[in-house]
Amino acid sequence: MKSNFDVLDIIISSETAVNRKLKNSELNRKNIQEFKSAEKTSIIVVLDNVRSLNNIGSVFRTADAFLIKKMYLCGITAQPPHKDIQKTALGATDSVEWEYVEDAIALSRKLKEQNIHLCAIEQAENSVMLDQFKPEKGKTYAVVFGNEVKGVQQEIVSMANTVIEIPQLGTKHSLNISVSAGITMWDIFSKLQD
Figure (cartoon, rainbow, N blue to C red):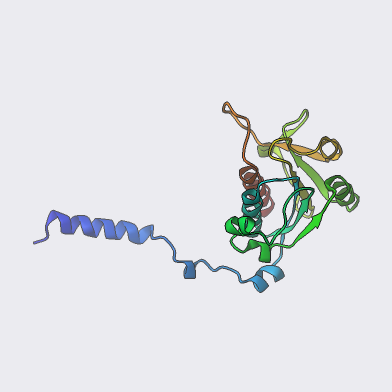
């Protein structure tokens, strides 16, 4: 006869079998070469004077997750290799294509000239809430994230095709840049997949 503990073990075992965590070997991760040759999401990330090395690394890691086309690091934004970037990037600096460009304003102008839809991620007049933003398939989007204190430079906000604001309902109305980048990349990525 089975005890209550035996029955409980069977119930727990059957529940965990349904919701078993995957092992790393089961995640079907791409290696660096597979990542580099994979079709990329038509999103470019621009970091405009981002000072936190951990934020930069986190954005790299998210860019890897969503097969982002390219990252531009501008102004004071630090560049790999750096131990604090690597700590949060977990090797994504090797997979994600990136380039340092000193002047984010000149870069933004150049991207627009290449018919890339420039999106400043900022709280501004006439901004479009992220949940209302509807990206078009076949178009490339450059999303610009700014300095942790000053945000995206006004000149970039002024020239942007779209200023996207992340809806916030609490008391702070301020998100960490790596969180903002994650939310924005996921939202645009998922809309482009539909």
